[in-house]
Amino acid sequence: MATEILTGGMNLAFARWGDRWKRMRKAANIGLSNAASQEYTPMQEKEAIHLLHGLMDGQSTVDAQIRRTSASTVLSAVYAYPLLESTSDPCFVQVESYVDRMLKAALPGNYFVDIFPWMMHIPQWMPGARWKREGFEWFKKDTDMFQQLVEDTHTELASKLLENAAEHDLDPVETAWLAGTMFGAGTEALAATLSFFILAMVLYPKIQHKLRDEIDAVVGAPSGEFDNTKANFPTFQDTKNMPYLHAVIKEVMRYSF
Image (tube, rainbow, N blue to C red):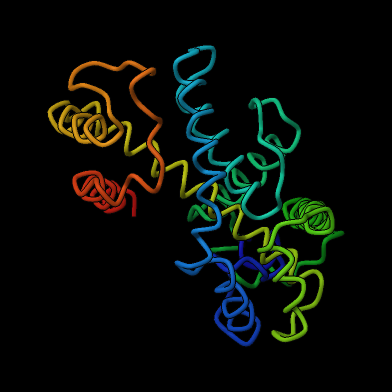
């Protein structure tokens, strides 16, 4: 269901290995290298501040704030989409709907077609084939959404994908789905990682305090106190002086994946 119907075989996370998969994976390296990731740090710093404001405000759940931040960060990186202010943003709703469909379709046993592959040959008009009709309808809607986002984008990542589409022999639909895969998978992965980080800090308060002390020492706040007149908000430049933070991040990544 997830491999052929909902994504048309164009989502790298579910696609079968073959010529298309190799072409799309090669093109994906444009925006996923270590060098390319450095371009996203200013935007990530802004999103981090917005997330903290949302968490302190307390008007929505922690999970909602994390998912909003994840979607906003990845949408901004891939499509130069403006910061999502709330979970009621139409684009956020579309993102959540797409990711939710993918996750449900990927769960074993949710669709009989995953157990009995011969069901792929059942015509859409036949009684009982509603799952197939709806799946292809969602594929068309998601394709339109991804193509519109790519057409409206001004980011270097999406621009490079469009410029190099011919080099990697990708048609417009494959290019749109490649960018869409980056944003769908990235949103879910980032949300999971942030959730694991918060869980780890709650379960291990001693680690949290040690990490806080290191951050305070680097940005200038006295230990145990926070005075925003004496301290700066941590940036990616500061992290080179935070070895314990790097260790915590690696451990959180181990939890997540």
